[in-house]
Length: 435
Image (cartoon, rainbow, N blue to C red):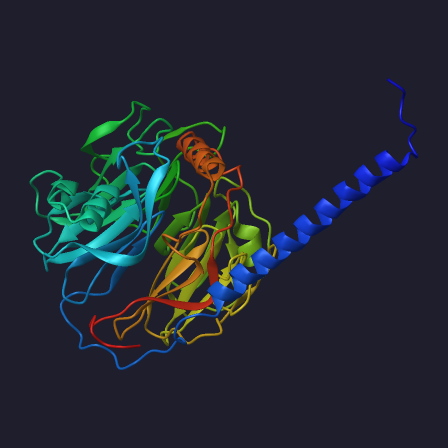
């Protein structure tokens, strides 16, 4: 067969066809992304806060990870996100994307909720501790089956629990007397029990005899704030050595609050200043920081902060006047500034929307806003968003979860997730009211 010359009409035509296909593909991709962004980001009612609901016995409670959950003003428990099928399988690639909250428990005696992965841990008014399989609870209510009750189980018989915090695969519960208890995955000593036996299926006390004020469970690291104002750390970061037991990380004894996520720690001092350390400290504060958390950089210059909410890659802080400020990565609009910004170095400033006296919850790419009027809004990636993932995307999502289980970062990019740079209305109370 004769060899075709490089400048032959046949080869030239093929090259032109390939170039045309590439150009058309880029145009289609650009249009699709633009259409998706416009159709998602500018829909729904405009953000506003109406007349506050009467103060009741239940303070606003909301929590987010892969799924999200909150306690309604009447004390009932709601959730939304992904209902996996089967609900307990790490390798499950089939899930129902639930973008609107579903009632998962009509009981009206819930008072606290913390979500991690597909599970949540709750407290009732009688101070008992409960675990809920959110995937099973969502699936049961979505399908109208009677399995919703099977998603809940009480942990122990005690009725003196004060606080819960959930990490990637482990959890902690704090008792009113100040003792700290944990259970779950422990292959990297993230429970601080002095060993790496895993999993730990029953609640075990952490550093027996110590008194704790609060606890914050991360991915493979955990932090506790003792009642003497000292921050303790245990677990592992990436391929570093395991810290088997709680170990002091700062010489200070004037810490009053802590929050962690995505290998970054935010901490509040008694003088009203906020300090950040860890992997994402630099994009939040604009200053480099070491990891594990040893060197802290101050967030902003103010000293009037009273509360912190940490999303891992971004941080929210509430001032004494009730207003919230944010700083960090804003790749999906999660800082509430009305726009998306690439990269880091997004300063620390007030958002474009008034959030006075709101209750916030955040993960790496989403911020949830529980307003005093009973409405819940979202900025950033929508929880439970229907993204029409391909089979490849779902398999990559499973790979990400497996990597997370072994302490690795999410390395594989999946399909585009819809996000909002302007607040998206998720839920409102009473349910019959219009926005």
